[in-house]
Structures are given as structure tokens and as C-alpha cells.
Length: 125
Image (cartoon, rainbow, N blue to C red; front, side):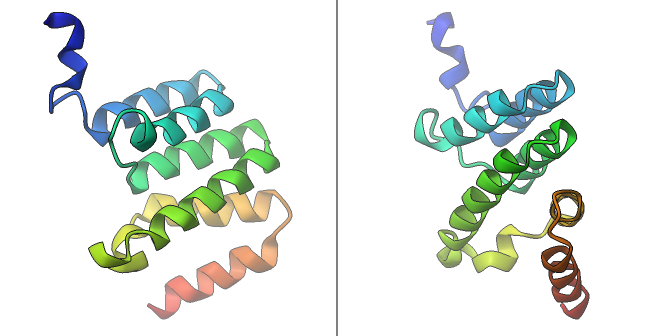
């Protein structure tokens, strides 16, 4: 039925969810963005990708919500760690936008050593 059209493959992709995440970011609704990110796999069966995390992290940083940013960082680490059989952490953490968002957010929220360590690790690879 047409009411279930979103369940079809074109609608059940990270691209569609990323558009919704970005809309929430632009509307300054970081908590809603984080909740959607968490629900992507659990409720909708769509795995968040590096862009999903970049958008959600940007939303938390732009809102100045350090607690949410660090919560999303923990989720990102768990997700990346769970993908080892699919190319490992490097296979998931490939996005320049995600890298820059992590570095900017860590610096913004008073974690300059962690930001510099991440930058150093990226420069070494």
C-alpha cells in the first residue's frame, strides 16, 4: 500500500535519513537528530553511515551541547568497532567531513588534546 512506501528500498537508505538529519540540524534540533540516528538501525533497519554521524555531531556542536556530542562520539565508536568484519574502523571512518567535525567538536568542547591526537593519527595514515 502507498502508506508503506517508505519501507521500499529507495526510501530505506542512509541518504534519505541523512537528509532528515540535516533538516533537523538546520532547524537547531540536535536532540531529535541524535534520536533519529539511534533509531535508524534499531527501528528502521538502516545502518547510519559516516555522513549520518557527521551531520549529527555537527548538530550537537552547533547547539553547544557537549553532553550530546560525547554521547554521539561513544555511539560512533561502538558503530565503527562493530564494523570490523566489513573493513574495520578505517573502512567506516573515511569521511573528511566526519574527521573535521570530530576535531572541531573536540576542540570546541574543551578536549584539545584528543583533537590533536586524532589529527596526528590522521596525518600519519
